[in-house]
Image (cartoon, rainbow, N blue to C red; front, side):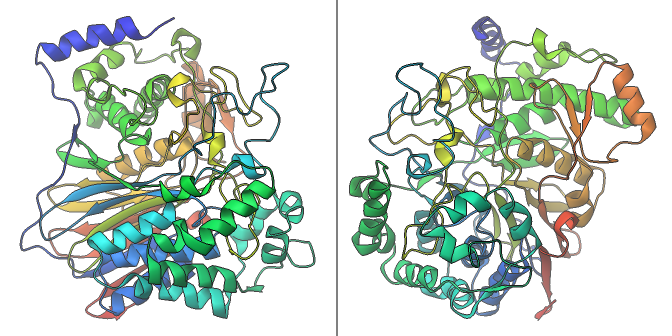
Amino acid sequence: MSFRPMLVAAALVLAAGLSSPATFARELPHTEGQRPDGAAIASANAQATDAGMDVLRKGGNAFDAAVAVSAALGLVEPESSGIGGGGFFLLRRASDGKVVFVDGRERAPLAATRDMFLDPATGEPRPRQTIDGPLAAAIPGLPAALVHVSKTYGRLPLADALAPAVALAEEGWTFGDKNLAMMGWREAALAADAGAAPLLLVDGKTPALGTRMRNPDYAEVLKRLGRDGFDGFYRGDIAKRLVDGVRAAGGIWTLDDLAQYRVVEREPLVFQHRGKTVVTAPPPSSGGIALAQTLQILDGYDWSKRSELDRLHLRIEAMRRAYRDRAVFLGDPDFVDVPVELLTNPAYAAGLRAGIHPEKATPSAMLPGVTALERPDTTHFSIVDAEGNIASVTQTVNLPYGNAMVIPGTGFLLNNEMDDFSVKAGVPNAFGLVGDDANAIAPGKRPLSSMTPTIVVGDDQIAVLGTPGGSRIISMVIQGVLALDAGASALEAAAEPRVHHQYLPDEVSIEKEALSPELRAGLEARGHVIKEEPRTWGNMQVVTWDLTDGDVEAGADPRWKSVGKGSTQDGGIFR
């Protein structure tokens, strides 16, 4: 069944001029005369937060600090991100209110083909080829993004912003709880790779907690990046080493793949929600559109008069519909025509809302389409500096420890972002990923992402938030925004118990004890299938800036309280 008739009907509503969709914006009110009392950084690792604060102390701005945190996370959180992967930088400049979305997403190699992961004899996906090894790796975008953000928006030389990560790599970083938890899934694959095993394992096994890990190769790559910029990674010795290593292992990278990579500056997606301006990720992220759809569906209800059970039911139903559209229509906007204006129009949201029964779950089988289930590995950090500059950044290597492959002498893992493409329309891969032709593999194309770095601007507060979590990123950011609406602090928003629905499978995933017995029974009575997950998910990082008194707060997700860190600077004193 096609959605096109529904879209045509919605288009007629738009033509009538009854509603205004989300827009792409280049600037927002720049809070003239308003500055925070200090700076705040929330990231998934204390060593990375400290790197950002160190750069702020040395006179850098939020964008310099973002480069520092990003590079440090790539070292101390190799399971989640790194310069072998990519990321999105959502930035707001205080001096003129400029907002920009820096797209450093990975690209498919130029020799990639639509059916490259299918068995020629059966037409079915070949197991694990999008997960482990050289074919799984797309062309990294994060190094180019670091160069671009530093050169275009930073204040310090790039080498100075990278210096804390260089020092950590040379002097050693501490192997922690999250590194250990994620490595349990990937130890065998890491052990099988000649570059990854000596870098990340000790005698072929997972390191003990607290092990001091050194990485001089990573330090050298960062030094070259700081000295030579784009050419330090994408041309010359490092580029040749990467291409030779990938091709020797059976991959298809070329020097042209690296030399032709470009960061893309895109205008962020901007929409109104309960009197606030939400600034978020445009395609190739699916997150901003799904966030806009869900919140605009919910904005049609008198929220304050609804019971807690009603609010939860309506949120689940709104997410169900947004995730359906996500899978069908979204992909790289440089390759496919994404109907952003239509999908984010309040009139379209009203049509979706009309199909929601106030007291009964809608079976997903009644809403045709496909969806994707992604793995929960990525990282996010949020920054506000003392001038009011803002960075909301989400970056990734996709699955835990990427493709488990390190080219010897480089010091970093490669990604397995080719797994984020739809390898065959309507057919799941080994991890349940299902997509459609909009997200099909093509040379130079960026895979669809759920990363949703977001900034929410209200009359009395600016909030900066985001999280890892694969397809659950979107539902967590929705929860975070709604929690902040209700008066939650940065830490409370990051700690919010998680509830997720993504259309298929037709079930409500919850963290252990996320719902009271009464709420759970109420949802089940309305027809919702509840699945309590054995572990938590996500790692939300939130910073808030109170516009009335200038106070800033950093909230790092307490699910990893021994690892993440929110830090603030007040009156020149960092804590």
